Amino acid sequence: MSYGDEATVRRILKETGDTWAVVGLSTNTKRAAYGVARVLQKAGKRVVPVHPAAETVLGEQGYASLADIPFEVDVVDVFVNSSLAGEVADQAVAKGAKAVWFQLDVVDEAAYARTRAAGLDMVMDKCPAIELPLL
Image (cartoon, rainbow, N blue to C red):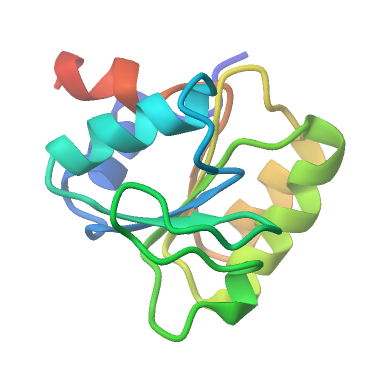
């Protein structure tokens, strides 16, 4: 099943805003989150690391949680296990984000339904680094 049609993908990547909180982003350059964050930065997005270590990554101050970020976030990009992703989606709604993006292999249908019902755009089981060049 597809969780995010082409129009939604395009809207999030091109129109929703440029501040992306990347949940699971750390200084580990071997992790997918790091590579995707670099692609997002090169595409003009501000990447805000969200990780319990609250490390500075790619020149951006990190935060331990979405709630700790002292400014608005447009998109929450989720690089955590599917069993934890629903809680992150709920936190994104509470934070006032405009969209949530679950990375490849991150699937939680109930979280998808809750997030959409709250009025946010959502994409699930896709990668923005793969989708950006297709636009």
